Image (cartoon, rainbow, N blue to C red; front, top):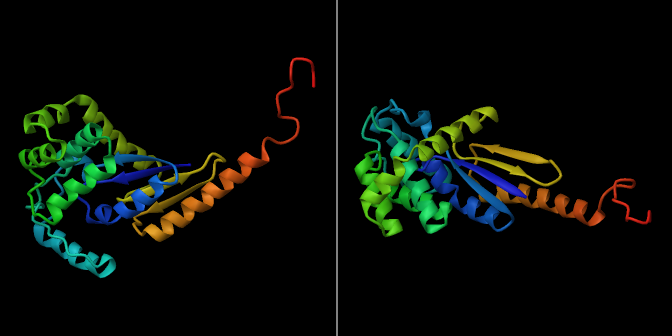
Length: 216
């Protein structure tokens, strides 16, 4: 079974979906797809609005986050997502990379919309110079990856982050758009995995098995 998770590192809903991401990673393959809000363009909304969204979110997830990183309408999430992708590849754990940068923004109040801050925070995680993070983040392949993430979301009709796409080897799938709750997502993943295992044990239908060379 495979789970594809569409994230923006600077989304508070994506941060609270980390437990779900970790849980499904124990059940099968997980692909983290970074898809910056607004395709990386300026967000266009105020710090006041972002802070209000966090206060509303607290009613659902019972955690307090800070919106300092969203300094105003010109703030972008592109640099933080590029940095997360880079350090995820360095440390070999995209879930951890995304979580640490999100926490730097929303708990430690780092101004992660700024490229120099995003690269400096990423450098601390990966234990490499910030200049190395900046250099890798500017690789055209990173930009292509981030843009492709948004394209893939649109193809699936998704417009919220996080979104979880769960697929088993049988061709069954479940999509959770905008959901973060571990219990619901893991229950669906286990159901898909159980069906996949049942099909595997049953084997191919009659007439589809390959015959041996002597015709038996």
